[in-house]
Amino acid sequence: MTTWNDFLSDVHLEIQRLASIGCDIPFFRGHEDSTWQLMPSLGRRPKKRHKNDNIESILYYDFLSYAGPLMKNRSSSWDILFAMQHHGLPTRLLDWSETFAVALYFALKNYLPTKKNPTKIQKFPDPAIWILDPFELNNGTGGERVLFNPETDFDTNYQEVFIEEKGKLEGKVIALIPTKTIQRLVVQKGVFTLHQDIS
Image 1 (cartoon, rainbow, N blue to C red):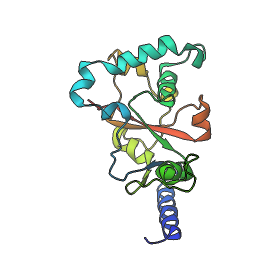
Image 2 (tube, rainbow, N blue to C red):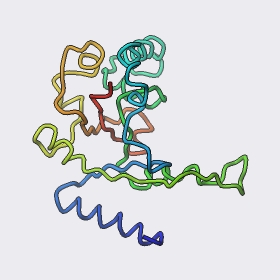
Image 3 (cartoon, one colour):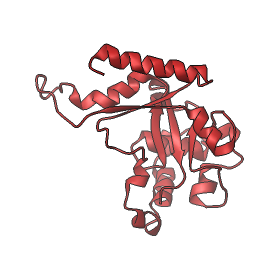
Image 4 (cartoon, helix red, strand yellow):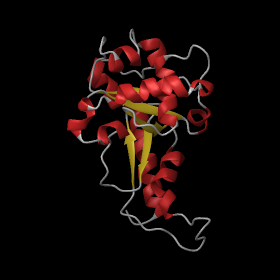
């Protein structure tokens, strides 16, 4: 692949291939560095520390206590998780988009001129764009080619499963299409993968 047009052609062909097998909503993710793993921020912590310092529970309850004005009354624990992700707290969610252009922006944003240095472009390792068939991911998890909205498709909620450890979801990684209650999710056509095994 030597030109921008070749790259766009490859992306278009992959989108067409996915559509031909029933994937009408591919997920896109851009990385500034192609060596980065597809791991949510909570999973990037040293593995021994995750369970020992109970960080997920602490972050969740602190957010509940202090972020009340950010949330609507009677927000679900899934809404709270999505808001935590939106505000940059470490979670078990990995951001994706339904839009290729959003992934492209995140892959290249540090190659763009900045306000401080409008003529100087920062240089980083090779960027990457990931394209995921979320239907196939969920098919491997639960045997159905569907996208899950956790509010309507799960019998349990985030707090029960991950904070109180009272419930369980099928599969290690699940593709989610959330209810768009946060403006950024609307603008970026945000979707997620939920990573259950991060310890």
